[in-house]
Length: 481
Picture (cartoon, rainbow, N blue to C red):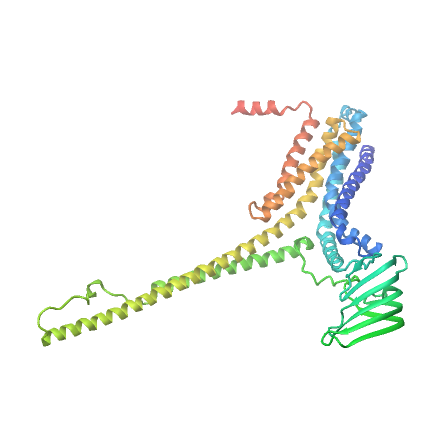
């Protein structure tokens, strides 16, 4: 490594680390504010809270590293430009690309490292964090009592203590309404006592001194007992106050908790399921068409229709009676054929309605499978596109540092933030549209990279060759045409 390479990297590392840690800190504050309600008041150990934070740090790091790359490269070249070191290097015969070479190499290393981190470390940490957070949500808040206030946090108990020592758990002038017995009601009063949980939080221990128990049967009001005591201990099984850790395999993994290979397997299964739905739709339609066009249905010719209501005039001789009997017979046959035809049409109508309903259901299932497969494709493309952004931001930050001479923190931070917001608007907006099936994942997840890449190439070429004028090139190109 040459001196100029070491010199350039020396300006890069400090701002890169600072920019990355700053973004991680902002994400961490946002995370704690969102999860504050799930953490406060549950008596969680500090180690457990630190573990939860540590499991959520990987996704913050993944989002912060591209910002750190942009900020570091911009600060490095901004500092060198403000001290005219870029001018000196250009005067010695080297160009901007030569000065950028160590930072480009650094960006390539970050790209491959972040891809591995995205594919191996991040899915596992996301799954463990989801499992731990669900366990914390199930945990009931730590049992707290306030002086002069009823507490019903414990199932079956309502407790009132006129004075509470929150440090030792000591109670004074206590009244307890015990409704754990389905046959009787107990009202317990005592001069003093204390309340605590067992070491595994599986039992509640209430120790009372100098009091009495008023017991009354629900079915027989005359069965009333008054029991005086010097010391009375209540043991009650409780659940939910201790943190019960779940096995990691209990919760099904989502797309953000899988590596690329696992997501591709699930994606293939979804596409196969969608294909089966399409085959089922074709089968239902073909069966119905076969029934409709190939099944024999009795039809009635128009010339066989006889008006049975015609009046027969003249004397009723034998021929007339025979003729009338023939008419009646044909009329009965016509009625039977009409009824059979109506029944046939009813059957066809029912089959058609059934076909419509089952086809709609299969189409919805097919769409659902395709959308879910698209969501996995979005996550796969994201695991590729974010690491590539680290390299692309190098081509934006270095020439911008030269142009703005942004060696000061404020200008570098403002420029970096602007490009960072632009990139994440494309990334997050594209993710939403792709999840809804409005844009192909391959386009939506790379659109931000394409825009940043075009800007980076333009800036790099413009700063590398100051005499290059894109407007004149465009005019020359048009004149040749």
